[in-house]
Picture 1: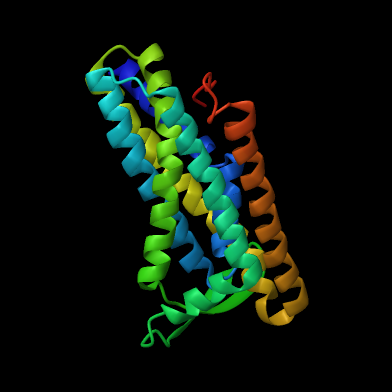
Picture 2 (picture 1 turned 60 degrees about the vertical axis):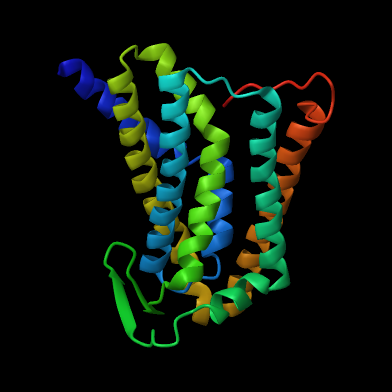
Length: 243
């Protein structure tokens, strides 16, 4: 029991740390840059973490239980998907399409205003609270794609340190819970400056949104280079190390 408690504690902390990976933070920053509500942004982060946990759990469990080996070309392809997705998110942000899609699919009946008090930060933020299918499916899909790219590394780490399949599966769930909580906290913190500057400093708000879009494109191009050129995805001798 003591050993399992330690494993659960470590898995939870690693899940929170996993949420801070650069590609994860950049992706959710691009998504929440158009959000006016801090609590809505936190919910989006939780949905992202849930999608990420889904793939980590099912793909990781398959690797653990059936000793499946991910082919190199498939592993590189999953990482390339993350890069292309970051480029797409950045493009949608820079062109304003992300905002238009958010407004288009926003529930028309969501008209109540909620005030969020931040005693520590001395901020009062009024936000139109609305989730809608667009804000639900977008972070879910992004989280699923990120989970595919990282599931092999998580499963291999578990298999080299824990040698009981039931504990390994439990670790994946605890790791996923930590990721959900970590991403929820991160998106809430990221959304605060965007929500605070939305009406008070609109020029700064737009500049921050454009900067997040450019950063997403640049990091997406970097990941694409790492997989296609450095990793040799389209060559006869690809090279991939799960991470």
